[in-house]
Amino acid sequence: DTGVSQNPRHKITKRGQNVTFRCDPISEHNRLYWYRQTLGQGPEFLTYFQNEAQLEKSRLLSDRFSAERPKGSFSTLEIQRTEQGDSAMYLCASSLVQGAGEAFFGQGTRLTVV
Amino acid sequence: KNEVEQSPQNLTAQEGEFITINCSYSVGISALHWLQQHPGGGIVSLFMLSSGKKKHGRLIATINIQEKHSSLHITASHPRDSAVYICAVSTSGTYKYIFGTGTRLKVLA
Image 1: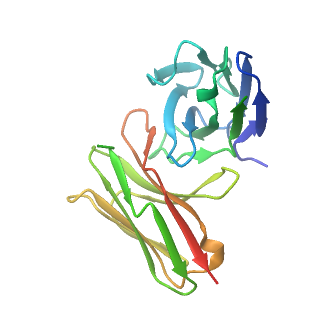
Image 2: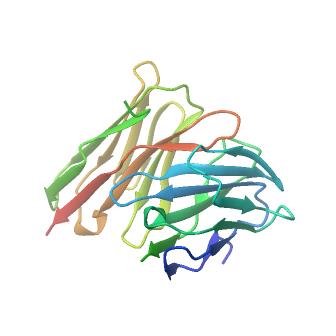
């Protein structure tokens, strides 16, 4: 399968715990995006990488959130000291720098903070 | 006001009906995207448009750049079309997507 892969698909955690999600983009894609989607809403942009460089971060990405893409391939999104408001679907997408930037999405990681 | 507005938010149709979902946007764009999201979360790209009209099977997407408006049409709707349809725009530079809130479509047999 050469699509965007996200792990885990589901995560239930207690408030205050740290969680980490992983995204494996399509192998030749140098752009990688993280989005967050709460129930009944469209996804919202969190952050963007071009290769290993994190070039843009949303104001939604508080100090408790950190994202990395150490070798320009897979990416991780960590949330520290989770809060109930962090419960959402976290979506990863990737695209090529060349062209119009059509993005391909992973299946998402659904986080529930209890 | 959101940068991308969709209507309607919810739509119930009988099998075979012609369906239209509308999207308007207020920012400069490099492209407009129509996406489909099924329960479980995965998002699939249906169309990417920068002008004119595209057709794929029973789906048709149009865009009017001057009016900053796009429509997604489904002809001869079927229960398997039931999903959330999301309009998004991408802007030049990072090409990040700005999403509408989605239209939840239910097609009844």
